[in-house]
Image (cartoon, rainbow, N blue to C red; front, side):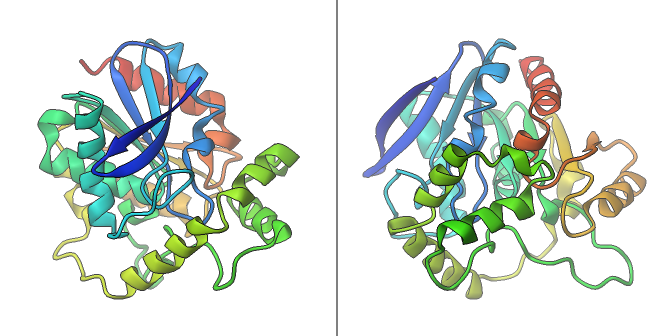
Length: 273
């Protein structure tokens, strides 16, 4: 795995890269502490399936610069700018949590550049359960109003993992270092920007049938927000939906079920020429 830095629209962006073949961009979520580091245990397995795997710190995360615009709309446009800088005319996308929305939006609007999409644990792409009210808006909102302590970072990680033993001292320290300083300031700004965001005319989960690029959705059976029940409802509403539920798995699917995630994602995307 090689760590690189590149300038994209005036921002210094960090990314990891491994393998050769069709390009696959791994897009991390928006929770406090998210960064390209959430993918480091997955890069080799995906690259071994004949893929050029690239995971970047999105603007406002990890070791990448903070942008002036911290909106989801900007980060969606940024993916195309990042591709242009790397001279990638096309790239398959794997979007975790909030970034699943980014990946699907790009497939809808720029399908010619996105020949395949894997969505990982994106609750907002599942329909709400009748009579249960609106599902909790948890994508990108995990974090407090004060910079977290190391133990608070551990607690937030534990909420996203079925297998708590995966939280090694090194993994915890990395997550904590990505949760403080300029990244915490960006988190607070994103929270303020969400408060002023407009509403979609039509929920994105209702538009999945319009995605022309091959699309696969993967969820952890034990994930928050009644994910398993809502996934079952999604499959009843859309019988042709390519959706997989993984047992003993919560929100960080790529950690809890690294091998199954690589098998489901790698084989699917490697076939999309």
